Length: 234
Image (cartoon, rainbow, N blue to C red; front, side, top):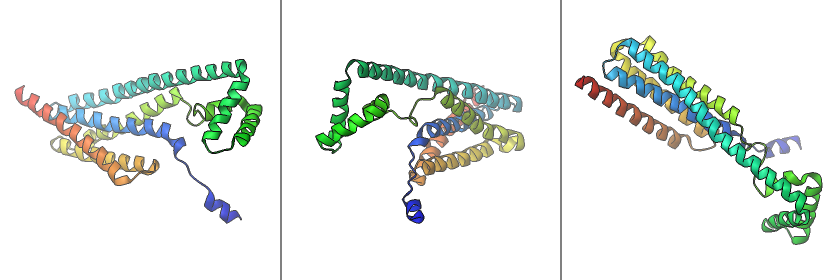
């Protein structure tokens, strides 16, 4: 019996979506933005000090920007959720019978008979009416709840972690090979991030890794090309 229950145990990925999205986007942004800026300044024949300053500026400014943007975005979502909850709470007070009928109709559409749907709706309403409507009518649940501060911290930390890798590279490689080394390190990190994100999200690893690599390589190539162009003009 224990073995049977163990085999039937399911691992759903929905709970990972919120923090995974913020963490992966932050880390990818950190690697691509910082590496691209470093390559652009280096290709323009910038001094080691200028390259390091550009990298640090990208890390700090990018992390703060990611945190602020994620906080504002998720806060707006949280405000909308709070407004929806207040509307639903008021409707439950003003029209209990109508809300029971509405909940029962949802279950009928899902395949229950009218009699059973009404019974289920009544029992759920007695247990926790608001939770039943939030979950089954509006699709809200605890693990999908908007968490602005958590999203902001995840974005800032992951961006800084991603940005730190190409930034550290400039301190351990010779100036002559800086461009190629930063590009290689950054692409390797992007490949790992793409594979981990795809694996954690339950998707195929190869397509996810290729997408991240292509866009990262394109961003770095364009920035390095512009840096070389402006460096030649200067």
